[in-house]
Image (cartoon, rainbow, N blue to C red):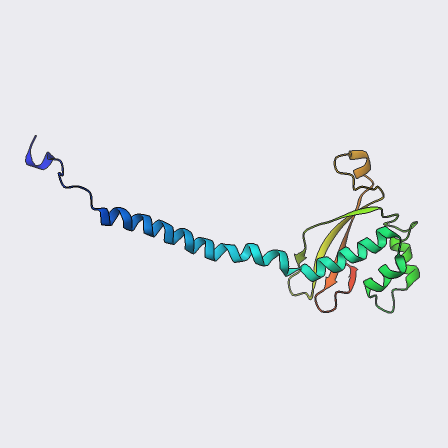
Length: 155
């Protein structure tokens, strides 16, 4: 054993050991502070639009189509008869007995959000039954940010 092979006989510095732990804690806190607000913020971004869609679909499921038409806040060219052709018991999406809301998606350069809604003629919503799920239809609803009026998403 030579002088260059000798082991360092000094004890490790306590200051260095604690500074590494403190740095790790500070990095963890910084990451938490940077990421956590996003988790709090996201559910509230489309809160009003999701609620408008939920109110509409609850009225359709309850069979209160007059109320649903009011919640739709239609353009003058979309009459109540047009609404019944889409959402009524014999309409394209009807009869609607249950529904499931999808994740809202913001359209680039748009004043609305796209909310996919799965509508089903069965109550409760069919979860794993493939035969009942085949009758489920997906409709993309646009909800305006300003007045929460609803419309069908353009294709």
